[in-house]
Length: 209
Image (cartoon, rainbow, N blue to C red; front, side, top):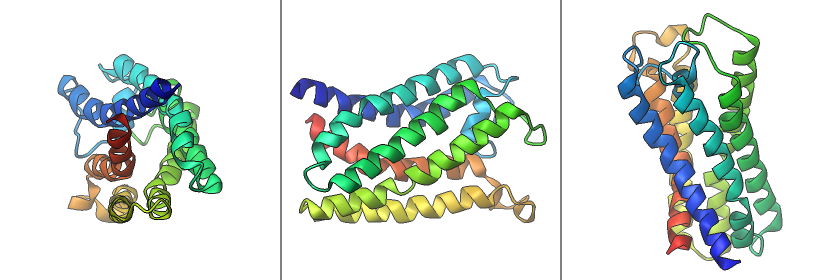
C-alpha cells in the first residue's frame, strides 16, 4: 500500500512537469503558434497539426492528477481534514475542467470564432485554473500546521507570484493592452503554472524520496 501512495506522488510529478514540457515542445511542430502570444489550449484547436497528441496528453494529465488524490489525502488528512478535502476538490475540478474537458472540447485558433465546444472549454478552464490558483495558499497553511515553516513560506511566495501572473494572463486579453508586453498571454500562463505547481512539486519530490 505504501508503494501505491509513492506512485501517487510520481503521477502528480509527471502531470505537473509534463504540462510545462508539452506546452514548450509541441509548439516546435506548429509553425503558426507562438508560446508568447497564444494560450496553451490553442495547441488543441481544430487546425493545429499537434492537436491529436496534445488532446491525448490533456486526457492523460487529468487522469494523472486524479490518480494522485489518495496520496494527497494520506499526507494531509491528519493535519486538517477540511483543508485536505478542499485541496482534493480543487484538484478534481482542475483535472476535469482544465485538462479532461480540453481533450474533448477544444478552442479555435481565432478567439473571434466561438462554438459550443470552445464555450464549454472556456468555462471548465476558468473554473479549474481559478480554484487551483489557491492550492499554494492552502498548502502554505497545511505546511505551517504541520510545523514545516520553510515549505509554508515558499508556498506563500508561490501563491503571490502565481496570482500576479494569473492577473497578467487575464489582462492580456483586454484591447487596451494590445501591442504591449502585457498581451503575451502564453508567457504569463506558463509562468503562472510554474508557481501554481511549485508547492506540490516540492511535496512530491519529498515524498518520493
